[in-house]
Image (cartoon, rainbow, N blue to C red; front, side):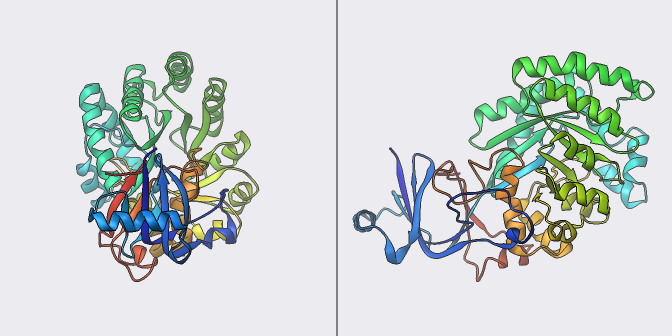
Length: 423
């Protein structure tokens, strides 16, 4: 059994047991100053105050110190804050290329919907993906995965949706499967073939939906390529009725639903997600009392993607209303080439505090524990809890935990640990 003892750390989000946080509980972030943390076999084993360190651990620490090995089985955290690694529950990490010219088009005044209508947006990414080999796509995504890991992300959900054909969607999902097999990060896969309608099916919605249900889903289920079924439920994309048809077909194949909802308007996606028992409904820039009330009384998590609203210059999600109403919310990056070309969860947390008026404690909980639950990983990740995987962020020296979102332009991540090993 491999063991690692961390001493003199400042632990954040310590919990003996976990559950999805909502309402006032989201602002409670249990911390322990001047603490030790024991990791055994890649998992958190125990923790406690330095003043009450068990005798055997104190002896082990003294022996290691006498050997003078700073990288040995005892690590002096020297006052660093230690947090659970970020759990980014909504990304589109697999894509073939950037879309900076559309970024310029937006500056010139074109809307997201207008760019999509003229063949840009998702269709642009689909065209580029069709020209890219699976091997090249894997290499591009592997690099992005390494970049977000160094920024503190230890778990990530990745969606398909830039294939929009049987071959393209399967190519994306097979890339995600390879990533899962190779990476130590915890990765979940969502099938988002219903991201938009391909040009050939713009006037034949039922034809494309049949393609998803009859030709894509059976292969996905047979090869075990996805955990979730996702649909972009918005006006001009998939209607609530179409979304329900696709979600139920995925559910019949063992996939749990997630829904892109209420980004561009009041789409009805939130209420539908709750009706279907979706794990999460994501975006939520547009919410009325009906949608909020539906989410409040459900087991569905509302995942907020503030960097997408920031990049598209759209209204930010009403986080305070959702929290005060008792909804369970998570934070994620929406990393994609068109509307959120960044997987930096540190900025997501800062933006949530600055623009959505979330308390630092609320934002950290939403980006760790609730993010883990929004991927079905709440029992494994998202808090410093005995038995959970040792996916941890070690910060640079900071005067307080609130300094992390406050100093939004500084890289405050010193080291990242995934499954008990520094990367």
